Image 1 (cartoon, rainbow, N blue to C red):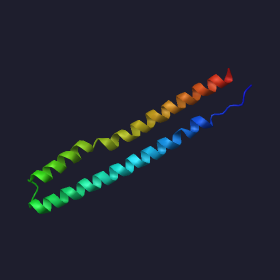
Image 2: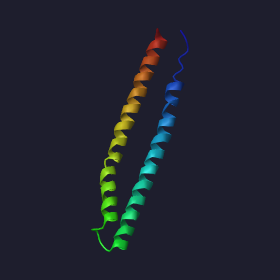
Image 3: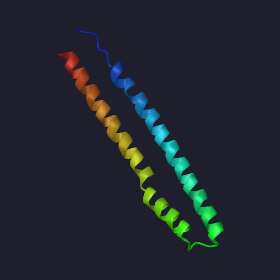
Image 4: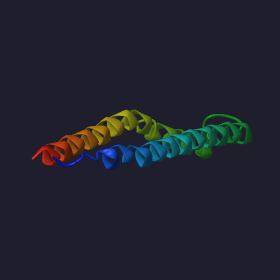
Length: 94
């Protein structure tokens, strides 16, 4: 029987974790920038009826779904890695 080497499957999680952390940081910074731009346009235009305020409000509304998708993406990728690991171990047992 050959020695099982599943380390390659487990090591595949490291790039996923790094990518998700980077995506999370980019999203947080993006939301903070849009919030600051919205506040600045509100103070420059003197209210909440200007084009700049409405544009940033539209962008924020369009982007508010994105953070909800991150857990789904994580579950799908981890599931795919687990299926790959099970397949790898099944092939090693033969």
